[in-house]
Length: 511
Ligand code: HEM
Image (cartoon, rainbow, N blue to C red; front, top):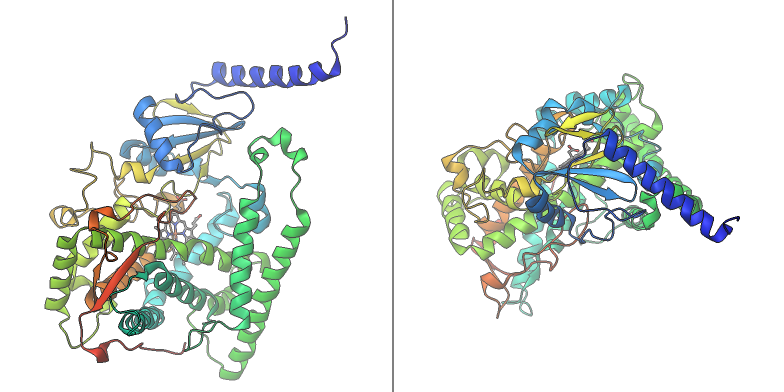
């Protein structure tokens, strides 16, 4: 008797699925994890704040777990030893990237840095970053931009909190942090400040923001089927929307490129920002236009929200812990005093401030699962098999709260780093906000400088308190879901100036 088609098709899918999983189970000794459902795997069991969910599963199944996103195996490690195995011992085998269809479109299939697989292209572009873009000399040369933006933030907070209508009212902290991050990164990457002295965004800036927002919208539009390759045909990508987006991004970038070329011809001088640097280096490194544009937009994607988020969490912790706020301010008053403002050359004399920034990055790394790596060959982690093509995540959030390697891990206590100096740029596998190994964040030092500077200015210039009626303990410290982790309830706080009025002026530079 023939089986009706309506039954045969689902049956064959189920059979294929079971056969595929059996093959995996028998051939490989995979890490343990929650039992996957047919077709969807664990997708429906994953809670929105993924790194917390993976942490809970690690409590049950151990420090290396398997999580199935549809038919793709994702391995999550949550201990410092296994982080070392992934990012140091097996680094090269695990240095590829998983590209969703949208990431593939945005990056023209990995022609940039973030989404490139580990190979000759990646090595070349990474070299450009290491020896040309993120050099200590260039970071120092770009310091006036950071100081301009941070002092502009101070001026704007001062204006708002001393406005007679606002005195004693709370401010939305991320509004100010976001402006610094946006202006700093657009100036560093593109050499442009799109916002004028009155805070008004120009036409190019509005276009820029619209492109970033559209990119996020397109990225989030992928259906569940993204994880189930054989279902993708039912959910085709909106090719048209992606090509329009790409064309719009290229158009704006080329317009800025032409402005730079003209300006350089007129002035004859090269500027320090990445755009001018890359234009000069394009031939030397044989960089295609796609790579050049991709790299510049990578900086925006990776360097903008991460810094603002880190400072927002740090401020929430400081307000929650008045003892820490007071101690940081005592240090600032002693070292800087009341007659000038802090700058980056003061950092070596401000150890406690640096520890506050580090402690915030420990408890609240803005990318708690880093960016996913992908195995380019079969490899073993923690004694388990990780088949080629699996995605590997390091839960750096969980590692940084592991009671096996941290004393009282949930306590916000910056002093722990005065007692023991722990590196956070990839050499100590207990603290990995920037990752480690080949794919470690190239912007780590820049990020640390900007976060510490923003924090230092905020604490030196203002005293911070929770909004009226809220006690410090009541500040909501839960996270929003997403690859980068914003506070679920954006921080609101009351700022009170603590320095003479003449120290609240922006120190503007034109570069
Ligand atoms: C507090 C601030 C920052 C944090 C916590 C942070 C963290 C990270 C992390 C965890 C990764 C992934 C590492 C991996 O895959 O193993 C990463 C990659 C990256 N970051 Fe950052 N980042 C920050 C700031 C910046 C800044 C300011 C820039 C540039 C202007 C930047 C540029 C990049 C780039 C281009 C990559 C991709 C590297 C690659 O794939 O090889 N980041 N970052």
